[in-house]
Amino acid sequence: MLWRVRTFPDFVEPCLPSPVTKPPSGDEWIHEIKHDGFRLLARRGASGVRLFTRNGYNWTERFPLIVEALGALKATTCLIDGEAITCDDETGVAEFEGLCSRRGDVHLCAFDLVELDGRDLRAEPLAERRGLLARLIRKPRAGLVLNAQYEHDGPLLFEHACTLGCEGIVSKRKDSPYRSGRSRHWVKAKNPAAPAVKREAEEDWGRDRWR
Image 1: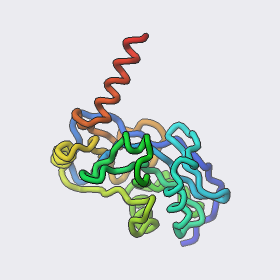
Image 2 (image 1 turned 120 degrees about the vertical axis):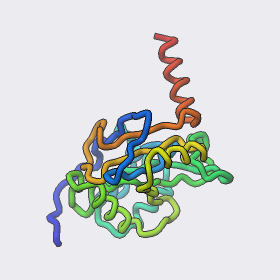
Image 3 (image 1 turned 135 degrees about the horizontal axis):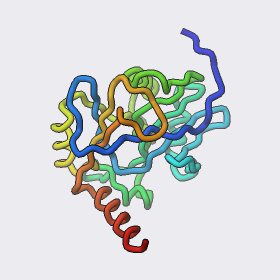
Image 4 (image 1 turned 45 degrees about the vertical axis):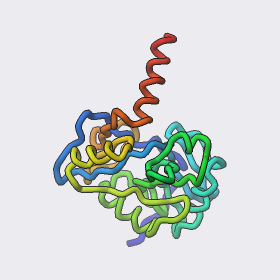
């Protein structure tokens, strides 16, 4: 089927998961590991590849390997949502300190596709967007990988994620559209022992102390 190419913005406000204490169960949900990194929206358009933070800041020059990977995709235009990560060589777990100092290669761990070749995918169900994203990426390459998704029991996967030392998991309804802002169809459960959670707690304590 041919889709009419339309004007699509380089940046859209990302969809954000709502926090929960216990991840959901059921066939209508898929689950993904939540990595400790930087949220990025990677745009390939007429002006080339650009990388944006969740607040719309242009970070293109920071991650050349991701830019190169986006440029090699077989697409005229696309907007990919994901997390910029670098992993510990021994554990394979995303390492935020390494990312901040940019030790090692930085990759975009892609988990959603917002636009493809002029087609606005935001109203499409997550399951369809994920299928298109998997076909677009096809195989892992330096700078770009597809974030794995699981249909196992959410609480069980969360338990395993915590054991591995991951930040937690994000659970998403398979039929959910992509909507900017906080969503009740995307939820996140965080590992209380993860460095990211401890880091956030320290930041909150510092803000409270100096108010």
